[in-house]
Amino acid sequence: MSAQIILASASEIRAQLLTNAGVNCSIIPARIDEESIKLSLEAEGAPPRDVADTLAELKARKIAEKGQGKLVLGCDQVLALKGKVLSKPETQVEAINQLQLLRTETHQLLSSAVVYEDLKPVWRHVGVARLTMRDFSDDYLNDYVSRNWESIRWSVGGYKIEEEGIRLFRMIQGDTFVVQGLPLLELLSYLTLRGTLPT
Image: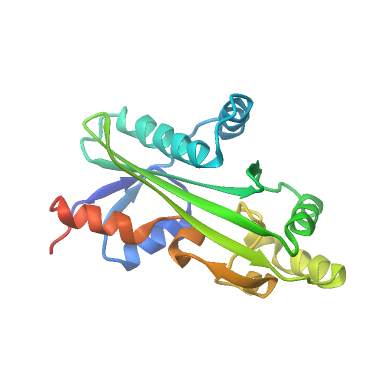
């Protein structure tokens, strides 16, 4: 069976979510300079939602331009605290500092998805989840980051709710798929309505 969609992302969890849902996808990661694009958008005063949407679209467009002739799915996720987008921590120290900043606060995860067909966007959605962290101790935080660094280093928030990271929270409002980086339910509805997936 040929792939129904191309995932323009190197995210293992997005690929797994699609596969588990019965969507046959091939993976061609899109290489874009996310950090400079994000900084440029922020300098223009773009809200976090627009940052997530733009990054997802640029990824989808980049792979669509390669002429694969299939649906291309671009995705991105940004973390926003009080309207400001936080970057993915690159070191354990950065992860600890960011999680200290998030401690006891409510932040947003915005997971965007854009589908391209014939070199143009045909569908887009930005899912939003609100997550509130508990007042964990510095000792626990340091141990948590040290223990889990190889897993969480690829996560925008420095945590994964499907792993030990769930212990950092006291409340999550929103779709767990959105927290994991993909507005899956909305995407599946679209693919079903257009006939890509059987009804």
